[in-house]
Length: 206
Image (tube, rainbow, N blue to C red; front, side):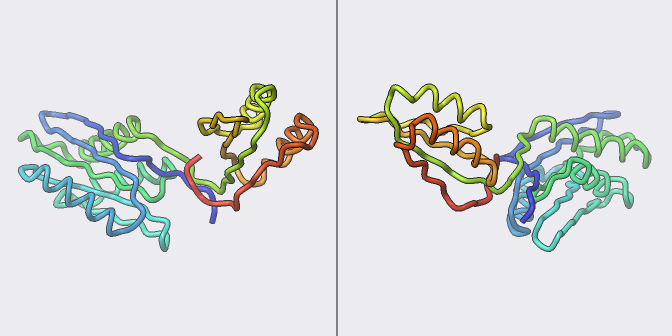
């Protein structure tokens, strides 16, 4: 599986033009069931809205779906899908709810409004890269704690809060395949007295 970008949690955005309000809701999802459940939740929260346009992209079977939800063809769902595509996001959905302001926007105005609302949601979202990583841990003397922590940080490791007992246990994650030089540094630092435990690679945000 290759690395991919997705949304962590949920985010919202908003755009207004000629008294029409466009409220965007974005979320990370892993399955089509989750995407549709998120869509239904947005619809339920906006029952008086004129349109609930959506687009989602799923890694499963490279699936892309969108709906104009009553807007003219290619003026709503397609622009929202394009926002996801241009951001390189997978396992993500954006729903844009329109409250009609009584003034027609035209096809160009609709494309601009739905695009702007979707982009605003992504501006407020946390985008993460899911990649193959490993979890490492090492138990060492307090005298070596700060030196080891600095080496881990310099190597790009994301440290987990250490555990303090008779010795210090450091734990961190880093991209799989990048740990070799750091392991050599820690072996040298501890003169071979500390053994670093390395997990099997797994996929997670990093």
